[in-house]
Length: 281
Image 1 (cartoon, rainbow, N blue to C red):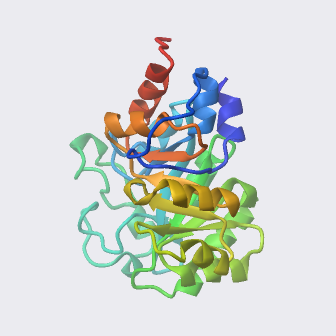
Image 2: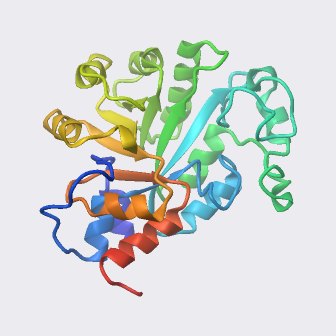
């Protein structure tokens, strides 16, 4: 059942917990999961250190995970590496900026002990490593970060890795920075792009279209029913981040509109999906 869900569910549209639930139809587990695909935020980051292979392995051990979201910076030797911050202090035992170390040096850092000592062997993976691991199992939402780096170079190197692995149709590149998305479009006409935002400006749809994007990644509390209608009319898919509480997951999953749910806890997503249908399988 889950294989069809994982490859049939594109990033679609989302809606916040404030909305009423009129028009919701009871549907089986497979249909509900396809309507609201699960995106593992930085891997299964609720139970493993974010953006590490441990988190990605755990996410893909759950057959219902359709997508994984991850963050990318450039190393000193211009290799796209998977880490959220532009600095090393929060999630590794290193110091300084990501761009000051080579990919090999980043790979041997301890990127897991901050979460739990049992993850001390986890280093900073490269984008290519993650793609090689996930290819054929799920799709990837690759966020390009703009910290301390030539943004055009970052976009070019990421596109090169994606193209070399021949997965242009299996990913979306997202960013808070419109100029990064414009750079991606210069280097690839086939890779999808999406704007990340936690706001609702009046000209949001116009901005998304202006940079050649067709995907919106938005904090779920910033959505309203009108924006959802506008994105649907404009063929813009939407992912809501980051939905971790069971109550918010319940409210979101009760909606009849299609949308992705990005969460640190895919297990909670799955539990709510079963709960909505009275399933105990």
